[in-house]
Length: 298
Figure (cartoon, rainbow, N blue to C red):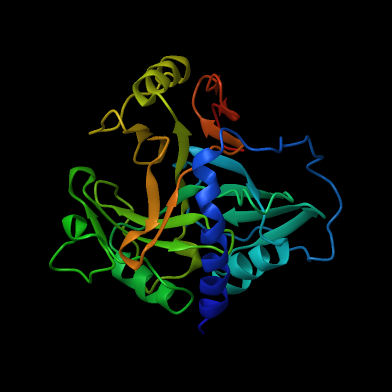
């Protein structure tokens, strides 16, 4: 199966032409509306969540993400359901829910195709399955080439080695231009047997936010949520949380994407809602970001 490899690449090339506008964006032009969680299923079809995540529901810190997308929901459904094999459900004509292991991701349709909202988020996978995940994903899409400084000579050049985090990962696009990642964190005791499948997409473990003052935003967020900085950081990048869930702060102007294929994208500010397992809730002042804390799984 080589699902949507060509079609995703062609649509991303079109999206990236518009991404030059993002450097001038200060916020999304759309605000997420309130929607009834029990709203009708649309013509996109309905699939109930399956038993995925290999019993990791009690480990996940990021319980739910609510993100904007300008990509047609049918394309998103096809990628996540037909391609990745994840359960999906159309909550309404403008919302698609993806069940990624123990995490729920809601994509909300917007019409601002020039802005083309996109995000970076990652999924934890069993720590011993990065090579199997790479082969599995290559049957479904391209994966990013790794910059030389992040390569591990014992792995293929499209696997990234985050040495200070003791992790290996691969990156790839979805039809909306979101930068997705499978990350194998070797400090976690989550080894699994067998080949890689959608059941090894355990839960969302990273979501990125774009701000102008990374240290200031990090200090405020950590104090409110009672979380700590995760390992190394800088004035341009900061991670809060732990291996089960990280809130990432990027400085505005940073580029992410497949840089070595000349397909970088400057990160932008887009409406983001996150539900996490922690004592408090937080809004990043001056930005359309909302982090809601829960003490137990959804």
